[in-house]
Length: 101
Image 1: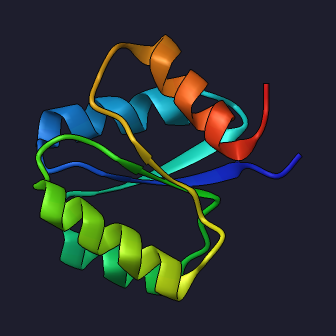
Image 2 (image 1 turned 90 degrees about the vertical axis):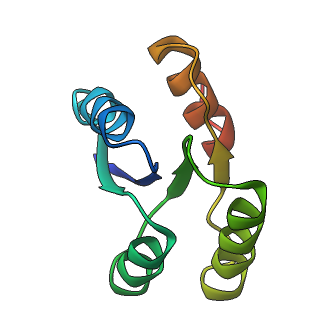
């Protein structure tokens, strides 16, 4: 089974590490973490992702800017906003965005 590739963008390093670890502990998922929008755009240009997860630390303007960038580059990648709430909520948000249960 193909792994679900997820890019995680979070400006808070410790939170980013935690989210990436949680996702990578799931056997069907692989997370790539970045901490800036510049890194995110560079990585998005060079790799395929099924989903982008926006974590904390970005301004609303930065989130909107990145969402627009994703639409222009890869129109079908869902962008999910995740601001905490535990691993149960994290995986619920991921599955919901991917249309899975």
